[in-house]
Amino acid sequence: MLQAKNLYSYYGKSPVLQNIGFTLEPGKLLSVLGRNGVGKTTLMRTIMGLTDRVEGTLTFDGKDIASLPTSDRALLGIGYIPQGREVIPRFTVEENIVMGTYARKDGSRDIPEYIFDLFPVLREFLHRRGGDLSGGQQQQIAFARALAMKPKLLILDEPTEGIQPNIVQQIHEVITRLNREFGLTIVLVEQNVPFVREVSDQFIVIDKGRVAAVGTSQDLTDELIDRHLTF
Ligand SMILES: Nc1ncnc2c1ncn2[C@@H]1O[C@H](COP(=O)(O)OP(=O)(O)OP(=O)(O)O)[C@@H](O)[C@H]1O
Image 1 (cartoon, protein in one colour):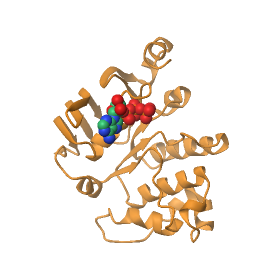
Image 2: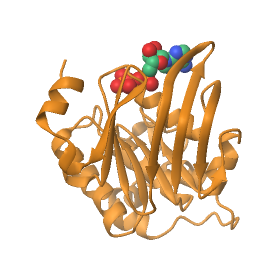
Image 3: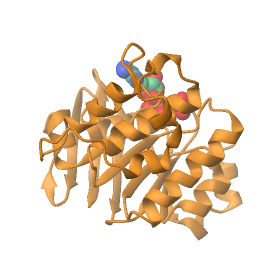
Image 4: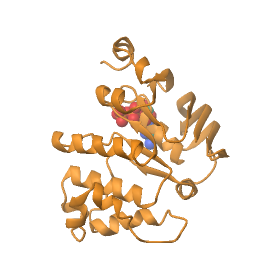
């Protein structure tokens, strides 16, 4: 479904990512690991077309998307929950979620009902301003907005960063259900190694902008983590 080959991604003249390669099959979950500043967010932004320039190949559903604008990538079915959530504080919860529907091909502005089954609190707070909700609830809005576009692929950049522990567990359960129950293909940037081991089909470790290791969940050994993830 998503494939990168010899992918380089630039901010200005600097190649932040170099020679990145991976293949993600439909319905699978790929975790992206690495220390702070190695390029994980840049990889997510590269998939969405938000860096200055790329070289190499990036295909989605067999189509070359490397030179498409971000809005076209969304229309093809790539949903993105950025680091920091980016909920619009002045908009109501409902308005924030409906924004996601604008990336839908069917033109409908309806919020799919299952979103409120996943996040009942959002139904309750539908007419409150997004900015008045807690960090965990804002993360739920960010999920709901991305799911409202009915994505085929969901990109999640550290969805539990800065969120209180009781909500972290809930977000982990939602990610697991979206992948296992709803069959959504997911790329997940995540620091929590036990959760990565539990939920991933495959992983890549990035170090200094390059792929340092790839494998399936069983290949994510303590030795690999010591080498590339501990500080
Ligand atoms: N908009 C930008 N312009 C120029 N350089 C950038 C930009 N965003 C990130 N960088 C640089 O790219 C490198 C990778 O940053 P990135 O945010 O992708 O890392 P990360 O692995 O996601 O880190 P973190 O875990 O802290 O989020 C860093 O050296 C960073 O300074």
